[in-house]
Length: 200
Image (cartoon, rainbow, N blue to C red; front, side, top):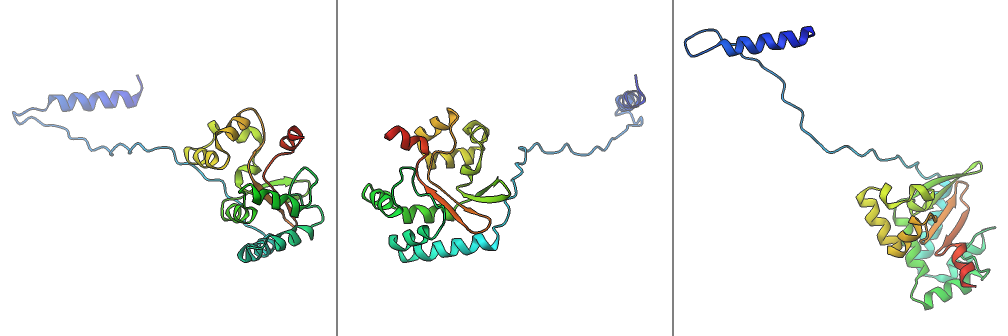
């Protein structure tokens, strides 16, 4: 028995000996037990956007404010290696086709840029990617590994079919866009290369 245990037993015995007949009693003051709380989730700190990326976002938002698909096409055409689709169509043809199906590229792009972004290191450059889920590796994207809030947000973005694809090991299958650290607009796509190959 260690000293702490013996001391505790002695105090308990002294306390038990006290009675109503005036014999001494011992009163112990102990600290209140800490409240039991849920574990605190530590949020990952997302790096601030560099000025080059902010400038590109500003140029994109200017186009979105004018609601001009032609201006969006010109902005994309000015990028050396911008990708809007994996079928080899021109940006104009591809986005026109999407509009006819009810997918508004301008509204969707604005919604993406309003949401959270993530980063991915590609070579010696940082890519800033919207939504943040699209920056995650496939195994990090599994719904079971996400918080309840993020899981609900992911479901809203890709739906149940998208969640099934993620569980099958695929990368983020939803609409996404990315801007490189030097300000190059890299892509704005709504499908994967696999989708395009399967449709051909």
